[in-house]
Length: 122
Image: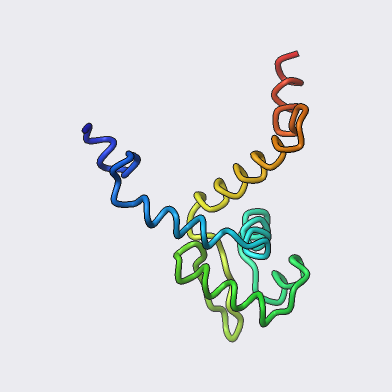
C-alpha cells in the first residue's frame, strides 16, 4: 500500500468507508442537497435566507443545518444574534455536483455538463 493511498484513505480497505456512507446518507435528502447548492453559490447565508432559497420553513432548515453541522459539512459564524452558515470545505459541493451530473446521465442523450465540453472541442 503506498503512502499516498494511506494518507487520503482512498482504498477498498479504508477505515473511512463507513464514514463515507454516513456522508452519503446525510446528503440523501433533497432539502440538504439544495442547502449545499445554495451555500456553494452564495458562500455564506443566514437561516432565513436559506429557507427562502430552498422554499422551506426556517425551523425545518435549522434542523437540517444542525445535522449538516454535526456531520461537519457546514460551519457557522455568529454576527450579533445572526448565525451565518457556510460549507466547511469544497467536498460536499463536489459530491452534490457529481450526483446532479449522474442524474443527468439517467435521462439519456448528451447531458448538459458534457455539452459544454463538446462546444469547446469544436
